[in-house]
Image (cartoon, rainbow, N blue to C red):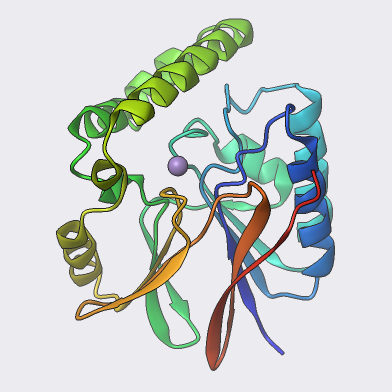
Length: 238
Ligand SMILES: [Mn+2]
């Protein structure tokens, strides 16, 4: 039966090889699906599509083999891997997906986002996001040598960890009013996103909001078929 799958927030990192293995297993088990959408933060850090690390090469191979087997593959950058671009997607046999995107999911207009743009109470982060998504700023950054960009990625990660530890739970979650606004603005009564690491299914007057989980102790995925949507998890053996 026709199915469409969604994953996000794998945060692939050379320090956590079990998660890369879990991705390999997930892709193997879903070769029969019609489409796979990766909704941001596939990588914990991404210095640019010229990344020649063993992890980048391995993931590229996994994704290329998967898309060559038939399913449509769509990749949206997240806040960690915001430099993920067309060159990587082309090599992976994937389409680069803008954030936000509306798709027709078995007749239901469905809004896809990474989710960071919904956390509007975190004004420091939203300011950084505007900079990081600016094409001019990105091309200036990409003009720097790879080694320098890797060092910057490490610094940004440390800063984000520090900021995260000082912020209250509410600020790190989505703003409900912003969710309603985004869904109405895109004419969608269904939203799928990740980022917050709070996997759930929320029902509100605006519609249905599905939140993917981060791949930590277990992996998370959403599988949609013509008459049902499921949020599921599976063990990752570290
Ligand atoms: Mn994120």
